[in-house]
Length: 270
Image 1 (cartoon, rainbow, N blue to C red):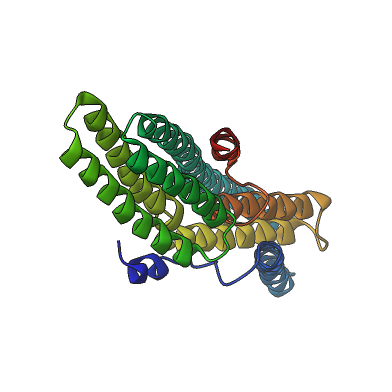
Image 2: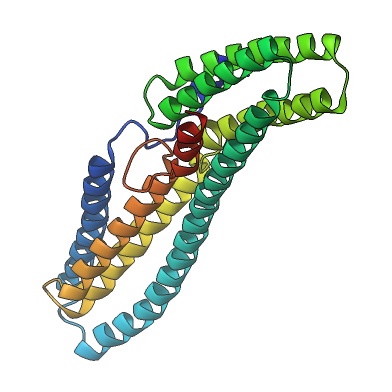
């Protein structure tokens, strides 16, 4: 996988830190409610001569539509949250699988000829340190490039071992090393390239703006002031959006994939 391909994958909200995403979402949703509220008040002033019952019936019919839009928004939130959660779970599983594969390869390397096995185990220790460095989100491109370089050096050791000894032990080492290389590609895919698609973000925010504007409009038909429930709804939506964005960012935020299995492996190698 080329480094250019890794850099190409950026989410539409990656340019903003998490706190800025939260504040921007909060302001956007509040402005949507306020715009709907002001539009309703404007229409109320224009229809002051009409009977109060007509305004009430309008608010009732609008309330049914607002309920439907909020239900659709809730479905979209649940879908997006589930998608981000599944990506997060996949990243956790890949870390555990990679740690197990590296540990197995490390143990099997001890059964190779001494010169080859010692060098292979040294390279595997260096490889684990690189994986932990990449998990911190620091110099990810460089860590991935060095990891692929280590793949080549480890494979050279496997080739040398197979030339000297074609026993089942060597075959088992090659098999586990091949699994390590495959899991590297999978981990790069799920950590750096598997993101929530931009059209889903666009649809979610557009639906949120329309739904919250409808909430404000319905509220403005019956009241001249915002209710506390509207502010609670705005805050709740912004918090859920923050969690979704956090889940979609593998290398930053509060929700991080635990590297404990890789750390334990590093300690056992020492």
